[in-house]
Every structure is written in C-alpha cells, then in structure tokens.
Image (cartoon, rainbow, N blue to C red):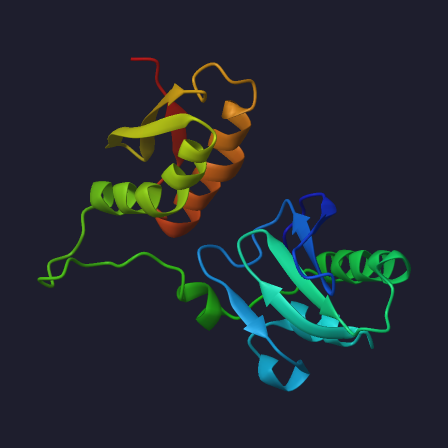
Length: 195
C-alpha cells in the first residue's frame, strides 16, 4: 500500500465539461489511457471503475500524476468536485492498485536497441531523462545532464534555472528519483552534483 499523504488540486481544461485532478501520486507513469465509459475499463483500472460509480462521470483519462474527468452536461463542477476528490481519496486509502500491471508496463522504456542488443543501465537512464525529464526542465529554463551511474547512485548535473532553485531538490528526489527507481530497479539514489 502507498502510505503517502494524498494531495489533490484541480485545474481547468479548454473543455468546460472536463476538469483535471492533479495529485502527488504516480497514477500511470509514462503512459496515458482514456476510458470513454465504464465498459471500456475492462479490468485495466480499479481507480477508473471507482470513479465511474459516480453518476455524473462520463469519461476518465489517466496519465502521469493526474486524472481528467469529463462530466455529464447537466452536472455542476461546484457541486461534484468535492465528491470526485472524496472518491479519489477513498480509493487511495483502500491500498488497491490504481491500474493493472499490464497497463503499468506499457510506459516502460525499451530494454534493447534496434539491433536487439540489450541497453546498458546508463543508456536506459539517458533514454528516460531525454523522454520524460528534459522537456519539462527545459520548459522552465533549465537543463539536466547525466554524469554517471555507479553502485546504484545516479549523478546528475542541474543547470540554468534548476541550478540553485529552491524546488530543485524536491524535483530531483520526488520526481526524477521516483521515476528512475521505479523504471530501473538497480537505482537506489539520485544525486545532483555541482561540477
């Protein structure tokens, strides 16, 4: 069971019938799936099934750390938002897996190169950083570089806006370390180095 304290906040989307519920949990790392109705879930997500129990939920989209709910037109966000948050909280406390193992594996990085030879741990780390971390860091005016991997420890260099940023350690530990440890079991820790 994931014992972390659940935090949820909502963000508007361009669609007035949809609202994004952002959490501090990994909902569906490195992948996304949309369920247009309860029947389409088909055992892939107990969380989505629980949300479809709410009569006003029309569709459920799961991704990284958020859930986007599309409601029925007659429902009012002001009235239903607390019910959606409560359903997410109750599900979190149940300790049940949010998505199936099958769905979790869809976001895993490749294990081999195009020629069939296995990727080294270093190559897997660089691949994950390039695909999932660098774009977000660069949007904030920063840069992250892989330096080394040894004895389970990944060393990264943070540059630009990331260097000296008060939230960079949180990003490093909660975000990057969590992602890398989950995807590459050999990783024990991620450290930022200055030079």
